[in-house]
Length: 111
Length: 113
Image (cartoon, rainbow over all chains, first blue to last red; front, top):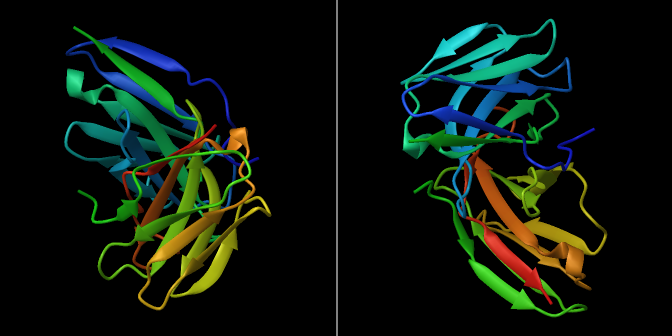
Protein backbone atom coordinates (compact mmCIF):
# COMPACT_ATOMS: atom_id res chain seq x y z
CA UNK A 1 0.00 0.00 0.00
CA UNK A 2 1.01 3.64 0.14
CA UNK A 3 3.13 5.16 2.87
CA UNK A 4 2.37 2.90 5.80
CA UNK A 5 2.22 4.53 9.21
CA UNK A 6 4.63 2.78 11.59
CA UNK A 7 6.97 3.73 14.38
CA UNK A 8 10.08 5.08 12.74
CA UNK A 9 13.11 2.81 12.65
CA UNK A 10 16.16 4.53 14.08
CA UNK A 11 19.75 4.40 12.93
CA UNK A 12 22.36 5.61 15.39
CA UNK A 13 25.83 6.35 14.06
CA UNK A 14 28.96 7.83 15.51
CA UNK A 15 29.96 11.24 14.25
CA UNK A 16 32.41 10.84 11.41
CA UNK A 17 31.21 7.38 10.43
CA UNK A 18 29.32 6.62 7.25
CA UNK A 19 25.54 6.11 7.38
CA UNK A 20 23.48 3.87 5.17
CA UNK A 21 19.73 4.30 5.13
CA UNK A 22 17.64 1.79 3.26
CA UNK A 23 14.27 1.96 1.58
CA UNK A 24 12.13 -0.64 -0.12
CA UNK A 25 9.79 0.79 -2.71
CA UNK A 26 6.54 -0.74 -3.76
CA UNK A 27 5.89 -0.15 -7.45
CA UNK A 28 8.03 -1.74 -10.15
CA UNK A 29 6.74 0.92 -12.57
CA UNK A 30 8.36 3.71 -10.56
CA UNK A 31 10.94 5.50 -12.64
CA UNK A 32 12.01 8.37 -10.45
CA UNK A 33 13.10 8.43 -6.82
CA UNK A 34 13.98 11.13 -4.34
CA UNK A 35 15.51 11.17 -0.89
CA UNK A 36 14.27 13.81 1.50
CA UNK A 37 15.56 14.98 4.86
CA UNK A 38 13.12 16.26 7.45
CA UNK A 39 14.33 18.08 10.52
CA UNK A 40 12.09 18.42 13.53
CA UNK A 41 9.23 20.85 12.91
CA UNK A 42 10.24 21.53 9.32
CA UNK A 43 9.16 20.49 5.87
CA UNK A 44 11.04 17.79 3.94
CA UNK A 45 14.10 19.00 2.06
CA UNK A 46 15.41 17.51 -1.15
CA UNK A 47 18.71 15.67 -0.83
CA UNK A 48 19.26 13.77 -4.04
CA UNK A 49 17.27 12.08 -6.79
CA UNK A 50 17.83 9.25 -9.24
CA UNK A 51 16.08 8.00 -12.33
CA UNK A 52 15.46 4.36 -13.03
CA UNK A 53 17.97 4.27 -15.88
CA UNK A 54 20.75 4.78 -13.33
CA UNK A 55 22.14 2.55 -10.58
CA UNK A 56 24.07 5.15 -8.67
CA UNK A 57 24.22 8.87 -8.28
CA UNK A 58 26.54 10.94 -6.15
CA UNK A 59 26.12 14.32 -4.56
CA UNK A 60 28.03 16.19 -1.95
CA UNK A 61 28.72 13.61 0.81
CA UNK A 62 25.69 11.60 -0.31
CA UNK A 63 25.27 8.69 -2.69
CA UNK A 64 22.04 7.02 -3.74
CA UNK A 65 22.03 3.44 -4.97
CA UNK A 66 19.14 1.91 -6.84
CA UNK A 67 18.55 -1.81 -7.22
CA UNK A 68 15.53 -2.26 -9.44
CA UNK A 69 15.70 -6.04 -9.28
CA UNK A 70 14.77 -6.07 -5.61
CA UNK A 71 13.09 -2.64 -5.56
CA UNK A 72 15.55 -1.21 -3.12
CA UNK A 73 17.06 2.22 -2.62
CA UNK A 74 19.79 3.25 -0.26
CA UNK A 75 21.19 6.58 0.82
CA UNK A 76 24.78 6.69 1.93
CA UNK A 77 26.02 9.67 3.90
CA UNK A 78 29.77 10.00 4.22
CA UNK A 79 31.42 11.35 7.37
CA UNK A 80 28.12 11.82 9.18
CA UNK A 81 27.83 15.10 11.06
CA UNK A 82 25.52 16.21 13.91
CA UNK A 83 23.61 18.34 11.42
CA UNK A 84 22.64 15.17 9.57
CA UNK A 85 20.40 14.14 12.45
CA UNK A 86 16.89 14.07 11.00
CA UNK A 87 14.27 11.77 9.56
CA UNK A 88 15.02 10.55 6.05
CA UNK A 89 12.33 9.57 3.57
CA UNK A 90 12.53 8.00 0.19
CA UNK A 91 9.85 8.84 -2.34
CA UNK A 92 8.94 7.03 -5.53
CA UNK A 93 7.09 8.32 -8.55
CA UNK A 94 5.20 5.53 -10.31
CA UNK A 95 4.09 7.86 -13.05
CA UNK A 96 0.65 8.41 -11.59
CA UNK A 97 1.25 12.05 -10.71
CA UNK A 98 1.67 11.24 -7.07
CA UNK A 99 4.83 10.72 -5.10
CA UNK A 100 4.63 7.89 -2.61
CA UNK A 101 6.75 8.28 0.50
CA UNK A 102 8.32 5.52 2.51
CA UNK A 103 7.95 5.16 6.26
CA UNK A 104 11.06 7.13 7.08
CA UNK A 105 14.18 6.41 9.11
CA UNK A 106 15.38 8.53 12.01
CA UNK A 107 19.12 9.13 11.92
CA UNK A 108 20.77 9.96 15.24
CA UNK A 109 24.35 11.12 15.19
CA UNK A 110 26.26 10.39 18.36
CA UNK A 111 29.03 12.76 19.40
CA UNK B 1 13.56 28.58 2.13
CA UNK B 2 11.79 26.42 -0.44
CA UNK B 3 9.65 29.23 -1.82
CA UNK B 4 6.44 27.46 -0.82
CA UNK B 5 4.38 29.38 1.71
CA UNK B 6 1.83 27.82 3.98
CA UNK B 7 -0.55 29.56 6.37
CA UNK B 8 -1.38 29.34 9.17
CA UNK B 9 1.68 27.73 10.77
CA UNK B 10 -0.31 26.61 13.78
CA UNK B 11 -4.02 26.16 14.29
CA UNK B 12 -5.93 24.94 17.33
CA UNK B 13 -9.60 24.20 17.01
CA UNK B 14 -12.36 22.03 18.42
CA UNK B 15 -13.98 18.87 17.16
CA UNK B 16 -16.73 19.46 14.67
CA UNK B 17 -15.22 22.67 13.38
CA UNK B 18 -13.99 23.53 9.89
CA UNK B 19 -10.63 25.01 8.92
CA UNK B 20 -8.94 26.15 5.75
CA UNK B 21 -5.24 25.75 5.11
CA UNK B 22 -3.61 27.84 2.44
CA UNK B 23 -0.62 27.23 0.20
CA UNK B 24 1.21 29.46 -2.23
CA UNK B 25 3.50 27.46 -4.53
CA UNK B 26 6.92 28.51 -5.74
CA UNK B 27 6.85 31.06 -8.47
CA UNK B 28 6.47 29.24 -11.78
CA UNK B 29 5.30 25.94 -10.30
CA UNK B 30 1.99 24.78 -11.72
CA UNK B 31 1.42 21.76 -9.54
CA UNK B 32 0.45 21.62 -5.88
CA UNK B 33 0.38 18.57 -3.64
CA UNK B 34 -1.11 18.13 -0.18
CA UNK B 35 0.26 15.63 2.32
CA UNK B 36 -0.77 14.74 5.86
CA UNK B 37 1.80 13.73 8.46
CA UNK B 38 0.59 12.41 11.79
CA UNK B 39 2.92 12.20 14.77
CA UNK B 40 6.06 10.22 13.98
CA UNK B 41 4.58 8.84 10.79
CA UNK B 42 5.22 9.10 7.11
CA UNK B 43 3.72 11.46 4.60
CA UNK B 44 0.29 10.41 3.41
CA UNK B 45 -0.59 11.74 -0.02
CA UNK B 46 -3.95 13.51 -0.09
CA UNK B 47 -4.42 15.22 -3.43
CA UNK B 48 -2.63 16.90 -6.32
CA UNK B 49 -3.61 19.78 -8.59
CA UNK B 50 -2.07 20.91 -11.82
CA UNK B 51 -2.86 24.34 -13.23
CA UNK B 52 -6.20 24.45 -11.47
CA UNK B 53 -7.36 20.92 -12.16
CA UNK B 54 -7.36 17.93 -9.88
CA UNK B 55 -4.91 15.37 -11.21
CA UNK B 56 -4.48 12.70 -8.58
CA UNK B 57 -6.22 11.70 -5.41
CA UNK B 58 -4.88 9.71 -2.49
CA UNK B 59 -6.31 8.78 0.86
CA UNK B 60 -8.30 11.95 1.27
CA UNK B 61 -11.38 11.76 3.48
CA UNK B 62 -14.73 12.94 2.17
CA UNK B 63 -14.72 15.56 4.93
CA UNK B 64 -11.68 17.09 3.27
CA UNK B 65 -11.65 19.03 0.03
CA UNK B 66 -9.19 21.13 -1.85
CA UNK B 67 -8.93 23.42 -4.81
CA UNK B 68 -6.35 25.32 -6.79
CA UNK B 69 -7.23 28.82 -7.87
CA UNK B 70 -6.35 30.67 -11.11
CA UNK B 71 -3.42 32.37 -9.36
CA UNK B 72 -2.21 28.82 -8.55
CA UNK B 73 -2.52 29.08 -4.79
CA UNK B 74 -4.33 26.19 -3.19
CA UNK B 75 -6.57 25.68 -0.20
CA UNK B 76 -7.26 22.53 1.77
CA UNK B 77 -10.57 22.55 3.61
CA UNK B 78 -11.05 20.22 6.56
CA UNK B 79 -14.55 19.95 8.00
CA UNK B 80 -16.31 18.12 10.83
CA UNK B 81 -12.93 17.84 12.45
CA UNK B 82 -12.10 14.88 14.63
CA UNK B 83 -9.31 14.38 17.15
CA UNK B 84 -7.56 12.09 14.68
CA UNK B 85 -7.25 14.89 12.17
CA UNK B 86 -4.58 16.49 14.33
CA UNK B 87 -1.47 16.42 12.18
CA UNK B 88 0.99 18.40 10.15
CA UNK B 89 -0.36 19.26 6.73
CA UNK B 90 2.24 19.90 4.08
CA UNK B 91 1.89 21.52 0.75
CA UNK B 92 4.47 20.89 -1.95
CA UNK B 93 4.84 22.30 -5.42
CA UNK B 94 6.61 21.29 -8.57
CA UNK B 95 6.93 22.65 -12.06
CA UNK B 96 5.17 19.91 -13.97
CA UNK B 97 3.63 17.59 -11.43
CA UNK B 98 4.73 14.50 -13.28
CA UNK B 99 8.38 14.30 -12.38
CA UNK B 100 11.12 16.29 -10.75
CA UNK B 101 11.68 17.59 -7.28
CA UNK B 102 8.84 18.47 -4.93
CA UNK B 103 9.43 21.62 -2.91
CA UNK B 104 7.77 21.51 0.49
CA UNK B 105 6.45 24.27 2.64
CA UNK B 106 7.03 24.36 6.38
CA UNK B 107 3.63 22.86 7.08
CA UNK B 108 0.51 23.81 9.01
CA UNK B 109 0.20 22.13 12.38
CA UNK B 110 -3.43 21.42 13.18
CA UNK B 111 -4.47 20.51 16.69
CA UNK B 112 -8.05 19.39 17.24
CA UNK B 113 -9.16 19.43 20.88
